[in-house]
Image (cartoon, rainbow, N blue to C red; front, top):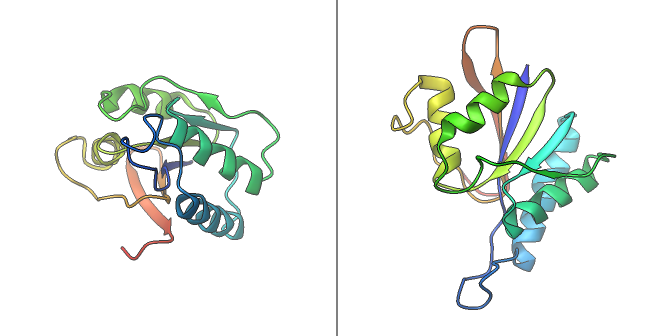
Length: 152
C-alpha cells in the first residue's frame, strides 16, 4: 500500500501574517506538484492536514486537482513538533492510501521512522511543495518516489 506525505508550500513570514498562509508562489508550487500527482495517478481515500493554515491550503489545492470529493480533514499528530509515532500509528491503521500534509521537522522525522525505525536517522530533507510516496510490502516501508517543483 502507498501513503503520501506532503510538505506544505512556501508560506509568508510570521512578521507579515502570524497565520502564515501560502504565498502566491507557494500556491503555484503546490499546483505544479498536484498536477504531477495527477499525472502519476495518485489516489487516496482521505487527505489529512495538521490544522495549520498553510497545510490546510496545500491539502485543499491537492484535493481540487485530484478531484477528491470528500472534505480534507484535520488530524492530530501532524504539527511541526509532534511525535512522529502518532502519525505512524495512523498510517499503519489505514486500510487504503491516504495523504498527510504537514511540516518540518515532523515530516523528515516521520519518514526516518518509517524507513529506518529511527526518527533521528535523517532519511531525507523535504523541500516545500513536495510529495513523497512511501510504500509497504507488508514488512517494511520504503520511499518509492518523490514529486517536487524544487530541485532535490
